Image (cartoon, rainbow, N blue to C red; front, side, top):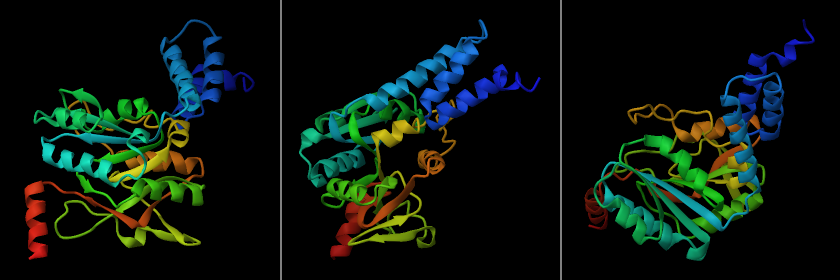
Length: 289
């Protein structure tokens, strides 16, 4: 009885799904092959095998760009999206041909698609709000060496933030997920976690605060992203587009299981959480006054 237990179909299926969730594609395929060899059964086995083969293909794919900036927008605030995309183009030091922008439009009807196209972005539009689950196809189509999750309400970035991220990845190879920090003031709607959530990691002249990375502007290499099978196995939103769970903790969880680290760059801060450009400009004018 004990000798046959390892090939029990329910156990094999559970092990294969676990391997798929964490990006262990070759082991998942071996398990699914053993399951299929037991005879005709669930047609979902081949679907899961296709997912594993697709994951291996993604890992083998050579990047066409250095960065893929992935921006998800909804809520009809095209002016904020305009500021976000203009900020990416203005603050990147790499040539535009090395920076891909992908914009997912979640049901907006305010001209966001035309704004995204004007900045040379690849656009995926959904008439119904899928909330964070739209990230799945956006990241799947990204062709950059580094994939960057950018919130659409980040209206400005530190100059040369792309090069800053590259320098930090080179100096901290044990870190897989690195993000900018965010300016905290009385205007922005969302703020970084408190300082006690972070532990400074100083290496020469460079520092990373190890701790939570937010989606305001966070980068992961395509090898690390597809190596953990991204958001596979996670439902981020319900059928009505209501948020179930944030995207960043799912990445933390999978990376931690692989012994990979994550953190933020304390000196590179973006302006995040702006809900109205008119109010933001009024706030700026008040500061100057």
